[in-house]
Length: 102
Image (cartoon, rainbow, N blue to C red):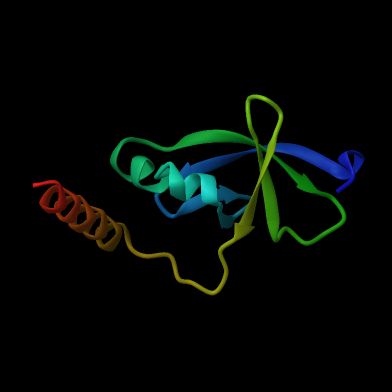
């Protein structure tokens, strides 16, 4: 990937994914660090990203504080769940985690 073909921008981390230009993305870092759950229970936040000028917007890259890039792939073919369904899902997950810790 050539650095001169990259544009920088900002994406929002939400309960339904990392949102940039109307598209939703996900990555292993977001899943591992439970970004979407945090965004649902706390609040959304912005992350610095770069994206390629020569491709469709099928992937973006999160820029880490040390300059490393984390590839995020677009979430396609799924309907966005309603906020109520999403909240019920996260509440169920929290209950299961609490039961597991008992």
